Image (cartoon, rainbow, N blue to C red; front, top):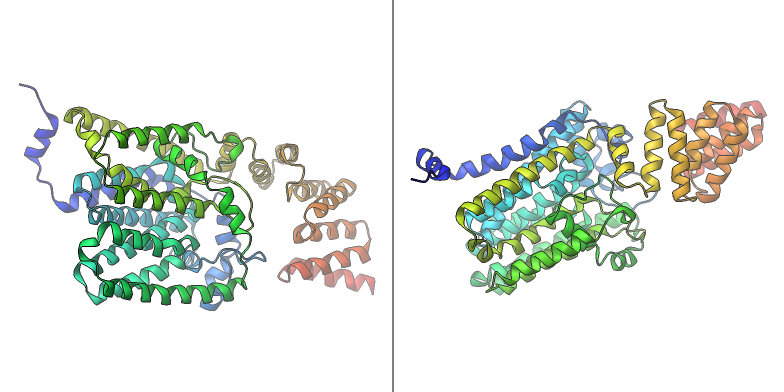
Length: 523
């Protein structure tokens, strides 16, 4: 008699609904749990946390709600709830980095649970919804959103967008006022987390037309729209006040990124060509095209289709990725950062749920072996990829190795080597960055810092002048050139540069101190 392992398991253990939630929590904790001991990567996290530590410590609502997320001169990103999440971690963790990583894991688990609920409300069978959520929980291409601290922007967005859809569904099916209020609240929270949530009303309408047709009434739709409109106006007014009406050149960037979802589809189906900092020059379209063909073929053999569901999944996946890849400054294809796949993945899962007829044609035992193989493969790939976010040296060495044509990766690896007092290696990386892009910002300044340490004032002056030709408003280069002139006893020139530094950045306290010092010498 043939032994069936799964039948024995079923006969011995009784399955309870909460077991699914336990497994969906344990899987990512096992795969990503080591990230709690990780340090900062120095890709945005040092700006958002270390350089903003005084702001996080003060936790002034006006300062946070009426500022760009980076608190810098260039104001493009209005994401106050991301900052508030850092504020909470800063205080409960006493400024220790483990608190931020622990919260990232928690947010991911909550997002996975909500995804499991949402898939079931979309009519996906519970077992299918479990496996789709399980693969989402350990998917290698989503690693960045879990273990890179700023990646929580996308897991938080998923929490709020998924919650808004769940309460929208509850409102249409049960017509309870509290569900309607929660819908409005979570939509506002999503807007305050990331700008792509502005597309949620269109997606919500698609959800209603796809999954809530049986309970549809114009009254329910009208109230949903009214609250969403109020939330949108609140967000728009706050954002306008914080960013002073800055809109950038996002339309040109949207157009340039229309095909970027093909790249992300390849990362979702074949998560092998991953990078901590992926750039176009080192990213292949082969995986994306192959994934597109394979998904299309599986859908073809999964007929009959439910076109509304496929259309909803496409509209959730493709436009959200285009919006997420766009940049306010209009820059084209700067990178394909994998955390952007986090929320759009829900649309792809809705599409994959429609391939159930294809998988039924496989032998049941082979189907289980396939699921087990993919689960183990994804877990191993994620565990390995997770390690590249351990600290700033490991992160930028992997960035430079996996994206060798990225001048920024070479530049930042040089900066990390400089912090470790590995000046010769740092200088080599800076030279490589300039070979890739002679106009790469900050590189000449960083070279000048090395020469200042060596008291090679002539070379430092030469590099800083090159930097200011490329980036004339760079306050650090202005300040450093002032340092060089001060050492060369050109006090008038040093004073002029430090005055310009303070004009560009009034909060440059060291420039203010040095200016007072040199003015006394001049007098």
